[in-house]
Image 1 (cartoon, helix red, strand yellow):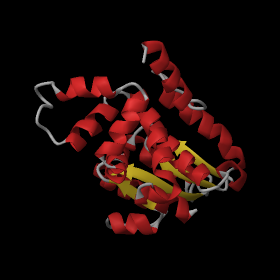
Image 2 (cartoon, helix red, strand yellow; image 1 turned 180 degrees about the horizontal axis):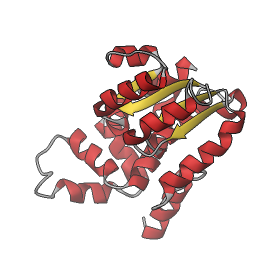
Image 3 (cartoon, one colour; image 1 turned 90 degrees about the vertical axis):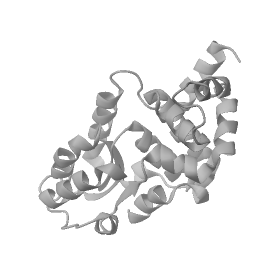
Image 4 (spheres, helix red, strand yellow; image 1 turned 135 degrees about the vertical axis):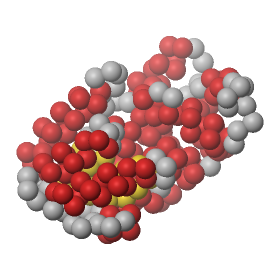
Length: 220
């Protein structure tokens, strides 16, 4: 597969989503424009999370736009307090749910408490409010749900198995668990993370996708 072929596959997987250096700002601006008609909002850290949620919803036969549900990428956990404050009871008063990396649990707990959404003490309380953690992140959940061999098959379909094998030979990754190597490879580039969010959710389908994503959608 040529570089042109790989680029075309990447562009196809990212269709409908901004990518590149200004992608986080562009994605937030697009989501903000949809808030005019929103009844509920799913707060996510980044575009990869947004893609995974929206693709899974479509596979489940849901039309989030028609339901008035906006998936809102905030550009990282550091923006959680402002976003939840704006979208929650003291702001737009939308019904909220969310997806976050497990190391951001305390950040989201404080943001939710401060915004008056609830008084969560731990991750279980956050889940009861519709905010679910990925352990350790979306990519980790996708790799665990898919299994290493299935992910490698998807790499191969995208012409990236050779690049992955090259990474495996690097001194710092040689001999590591293949799941850890896969996780690092996917997260090495933002566009790669975004692309495989779609491809792996499509491969898993509506019933085998990671539990945190299923739970967020079930909440709304």
